[in-house]
Image 1: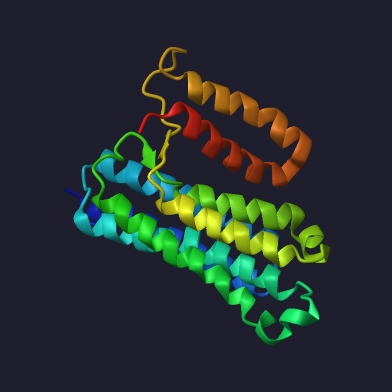
Image 2: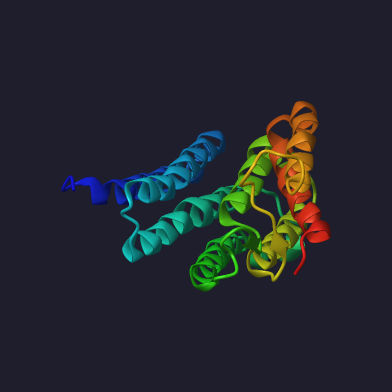
Length: 233
């Protein structure tokens, strides 16, 4: 065995973690589009680390734990920082002025629930071919695309903070909810057995053409709805 071969997957995982850290920095300075870019780069590394580990036959318990730690940075803390920055830019009514400066910190509940979801995933043997609850990358893509695509408009809407707080609560619940959700993994390319996947993929095209980057947030919402109506518990 090549001596360094066993370290390749963990190195890729660390690249995911670093991409997440960079995303946090850009989000903090209000560069939301660049923050989303690095979240997507992290998602790319996250996709390949497991694949490479299986290909090289070097999967390990430490790799599994490291993957979850990296994912919570990239798909938990980074989108939370994007929400924090957005909420820091909002105007709040004078009636809640004493607590307004603390409201942006509620964004970091996303990071906590993302960690909880990842911990449950590591222990849940039911999630080998599908998911129970919203995957953290999907949640990160929802928030990132919503903020990049519509964040400036949202910040100008009166009482928009209520909408954001409700969305935080809903997405946190979805992360840990006992709702079966399909995975976009095709074991074979035929229509039978992949009806839901093909329906989802084909429906994404017009959504993106119409709504642009904000369409990804709509796609994630559609993914949740489609899963709720098609997957058996």
